[in-house]
Image (cartoon, rainbow, N blue to C red; front, side, top):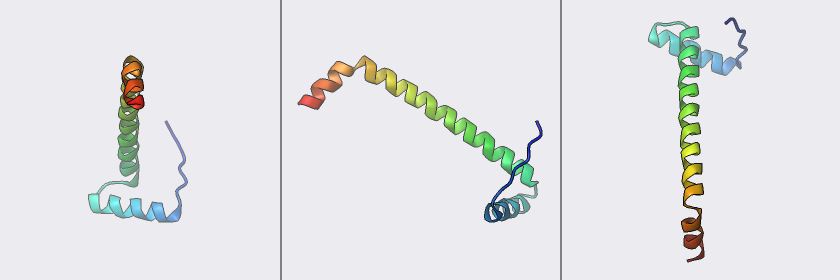
Length: 68
C-alpha cells in the first residue's frame, strides 16, 4: 500500500544516518521499526488481557489481601 510519510527533520536525519550505517534504505528501516512496534503492541495487549483474566479470577483473593 502506498503511503506518504512526513517526518520531523531531526527524525528524518536520524533514520537516514541509520540507513546509511546499515547500508539499506530509509524505507527498510521504517518498515522494520513499524513491524517491531506492531509486534510489541500485540504482546502488550495479550499481557493486559491475561492480567484482566487473573484479576477477575482472583478478585476475592485480591480483595482479602487488600483488606489485610
